[in-house]
Length: 296
Image (cartoon, rainbow, N blue to C red; front, side, top):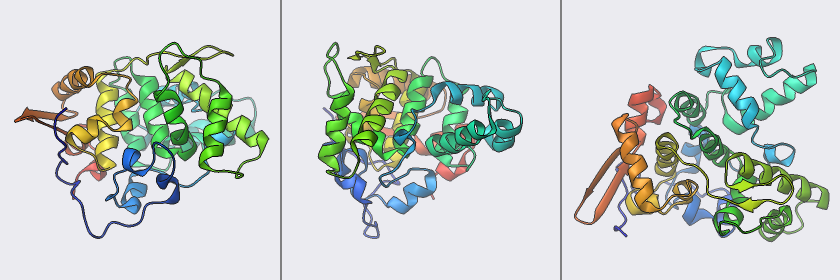
């Protein structure tokens, strides 16, 4: 494997603030999801979320609703998202309370109505997606949903064909946060997270779920590279990060997808001297017109 190299803008800084507690726990904790030197406050401004709560306590990643919203509003930044959901009922909810909950949960998952840069990036990439929309949605939800991040190790470490049950998620939550959740909440979160990983294509089955290989795309690979770079990784450390592992690809396959994305201006990939350098942040800021993503 190529030696690690951080891309510019991701260098270690002495002013980095302590990471929130949820990033310090679990098999896929600080060193794997977020690089130790990263300023968590800066990540929050970009749309990452920390803490212990999340939409998955009561709902899944709502892939169908997200698709309906982005079909009605290809560029959420130019429309009134609350009006679309509450008044025009583009999600076809039967009650006003259902529409209000859908708006709240979608904003929690993707930050579309709050203008979160990583959510706006998701929306613009959605229009370019070449079959990778479920993975795009999952990646954004992982950045914004701490409970969902907690479950990634259960799924990504499971062998293809093996059974993955909701109690496996429950055991993970209990191991990371002993005595924090009631039995009812553990079951609800676990079943919702299992459903999300099914919607993303990592699991298959309605009741008995088995691990399958998700279908990745060049656009999803570019988004994973962006989130990983924002989280402080570069080069080989980016390729080994859980953001890229979520694609369910080998390193060779991932690099091939990233080179496809490079032709669309979404990333830059350079190899030489045993070092692979991957930069998505500035390229995507320019390609998508989301300047908050760019390095200052």
